[in-house]
Length: 127
Image 1 (cartoon, rainbow, N blue to C red):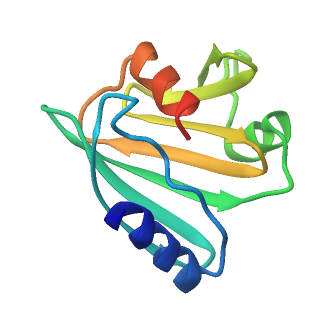
Image 2 (image 1 turned 180 degrees about the vertical axis):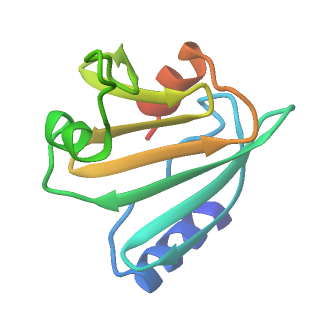
């Protein structure tokens, strides 16, 4: 229960309510959490790298969010690719940076090493 308690305390500090992502079910190890300015930052790892998952409450849906945080090249090509996991669109900016909206929460994941599509889908499913 320590990770869940840590998440609740970080949520209090950040001023948000949260539920603990199930990193183990997604194939990762939980490393810790901190809260600041209405955001929670979870640290987790695989055998090869460490990652951060930032979550914050939002009124945006996925399409509104991606219009605000993405750009398009002169030829019309967006700076992201889209992966669909269930009914959630995941927007990948690089192999180690992606974002999505789920249940009124905006998630952003960053890491030292690439996350493949299977890892991203498992992470989305377990948030």
